[in-house]
Length: 107
Image 1 (tube, one colour):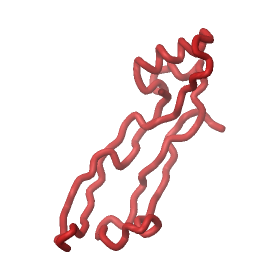
Image 2 (image 1 turned 30 degrees about the horizontal axis):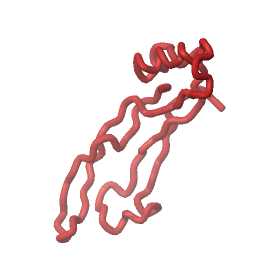
Image 3 (image 1 turned 180 degrees about the vertical axis):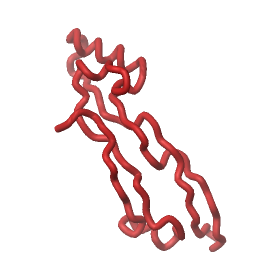
Image 4 (image 1 turned 90 degrees about the horizontal axis):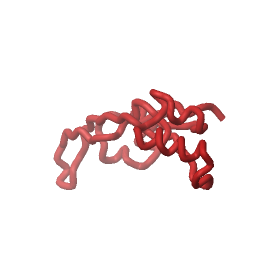
């Protein structure tokens, strides 16, 4: 398995049963984070999700609480604009936060 990184991932709303109320888009690249977070890389700039991660990786490197592990997670997300039918069958435009993953890191 590779080091923690962003993977392009497209979802069509019909695949999850949302095509009956979402007008547009028909789907989108939601993306996902995948990969390993080795202790020696987890504290590296651009890989560590936060200062918390850098300290946590030092804890792991020094065999303190060795049963804990680092995870590959989203570090930057952005919204997605939707056109959809609400409960009254009115067309609504909304920007839903945190729908698209733009970058990943270890935490």
